[in-house]
Length: 512
Image (spheres, rainbow, N blue to C red):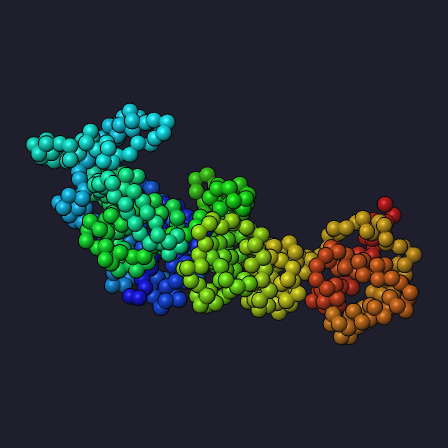
């Protein structure tokens, strides 16, 4: 195989959808697996849809995701420029070449004339008539006009576009790595626009010219581009480049969780789940990103890799390096992949649990400081070590761990207090508090041993003691080991919380 060169070629028309990021990921993994080159090319020829800030967003999203680029607008190689608008002069030359060799033509039709043609020819069976071999003879183009008419229109500066001339009755075949041999009839195609009136190329023209001159070996892209591929095959053929045409690989769609329809940004906004790697704000909405949603980039990448690919084993957790080694284009699925945010959260939890306490403390510190607290590194690391199995995304850390930083102000289960708190045991509970206060070795193991010994000696049940210790020190009956929790909080804080908690329990019981 010749050297692998793949490109991710987004348009800066908005934020990078998670489906686009998956396309970038598969290109990246394949390039790294094969010792090849991963390229970012910005396809910005459609200036009417250009969105300010989108290009910067794309670069930041790839960087945060860990998809390192070998060539890009920020890392020039030998095949630049890497922004299509900077390559404008190239495209017109090859479009004109296609006209000269009879594979393309000038079209002077106005938008109104095009609309009238489509309206006149529209039928129930064909609601969207094409500009093709059937209709072009009745339209205003260099195939239907006389030489004198054509010359006059060009001399008068009449705006024109260049269209590809697709001949009828041809079977266009190509091989797709995911879908096998694919065949289209040329009768199904329209005469695609190659150059617009402003001399800017369309996607079809620029894509082929750029892929050829950038020596792209494999085109790995979403399945929405599959219907355009026969047009691209014809362009390679008509330009004499068919022998070096890249291999195609069309990826399955990412679907909504119910499998009904493509995952969209509107679905994400409606359901409050991230469908972009990073947060994006437009004129109407603020769309949450995986980063702002508390996901680790490695976990998101692991999750994305499985949306359309599987390694053929039971293994699910893959580091980026593991993914590179395991990845094969041939193991990409044909059918659409359902987007499951709960599975994404599960992946994230696995990565959180594998993260060192010191690193995790750095990641959650912004959430703690946003609530007005400045814990020491040592204290925050201890909390992380105790709680890392108790939250799935970083944004959950504060809510699940707030009692380590703030005094208990309420109890999540007053029902158990009203039902099972026994004022007649209050003296024993005070004695237990004193026993805990006197401990010189305030470790979870030592606290647990003395509490259990006390319960046995005083002939109490665990249910009469442990839930109330937990409620007093944390305000909740859920969470990590109560003894480890007490060890992290420290003897002074625990003593204060037990005293206040027992008083509160008496009041709650009195008012029951």
